[in-house]
Length: 311
Image 1 (cartoon, one colour):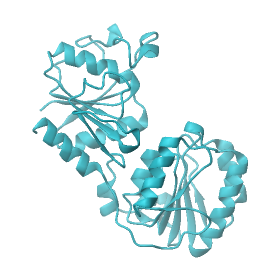
Image 2 (cartoon, helix red, strand yellow; image 1 turned 90 degrees about the vertical axis):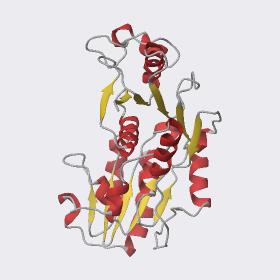
Image 3 (cartoon, helix red, strand yellow; image 1 turned 135 degrees about the horizontal axis):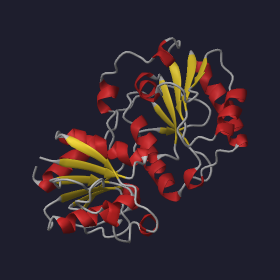
């Protein structure tokens, strides 16, 4: 079984597709699209860049076509249509997230529940696919970055201002005050920013956060993100990121969601659902222990793909 993972390289898309491909159990190749203008601008509605058409030497669709292509991202949607056409429909397309165009092209389309998509080829789950389940269940040796932190520690996972979330300096000062209070119940605090976290937000958070033992990843060396999720006494995750919140929910730790002002309405709905179903609590200024079960939709998503493709 030949499987391709096809994205434009966006980290969130690539991680989700690779996680699904890995869980399916087949060897897979990761291929990256990079359409030129104007084809980039026309995606997902326009045709594939001729330089990246099926069979084009040096392009992402070069070589024998796959049996299955797992695709995500706006710039890869034209490639899905091109694969279907070139193979006479033989290539089975698995699409992750709403392509916003030609939703009938994928044989299977997974979309998050907050998109509220319906169709014969569509199914949804509340949280996203990822590959962190095994690391959460059986964490290995801790990374050097957090190995010497006294425990239990309060883990903090930050997002960024996409979708209108407030990551201003005043928001950082406010969060720092809340974390300082919550941190009184923990021996240390470990913070990991995302690629989207503004530098001035981190500077303000570092300046105003008070605790005897604080670690804030400075984006050099290995990101201890997975270790923080797996080993925290409790987790506080930014609710602006669907992916990071979904990954945090796979942790066995109590999960609290910090809800920045201005997050997108769809993500706000997701946060409300997670809290209503008891998977997490909203973060105010305390993070006491509570019992919960880890949530990981990946096995459910992969099982549904197998069923629909008769694998």
